[in-house]
Length: 138
Image (cartoon, rainbow, N blue to C red; front, side):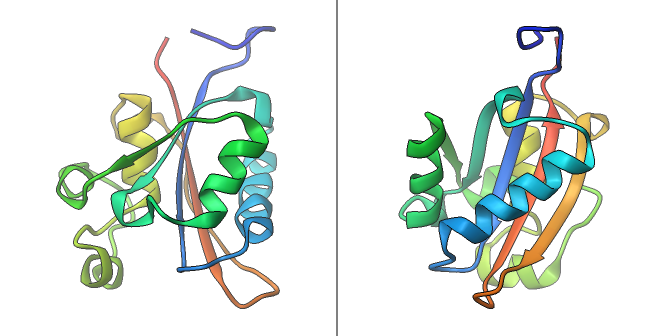
């Protein structure tokens, strides 16, 4: 299903350092959307790892945009094939991918649906945010 106007519906996977400001995550998301010519209105699903279920920035963005965020356990994320697995991410989270795997799970789609693989931003605050975007199948 497309959004009004025939635009694709998108699923976004988010990752960030602990206590990353919402402004840094929002900037990473804006950059990722701009890179594929998408808009905030195209987002139909947002997800991350359950370790981030208490992350203030993610909840602040969800409130701002009216999103429900799904939080997946590391084991579910680890079972998803991704193009950019990271041993560093695995060491800290128990899965080699957070944003890519979360986007694909939220989209209910396979690897071919990934439109933004792993957009990383180190904010002016020194904190890192990662955004991946997948197309939700029609």
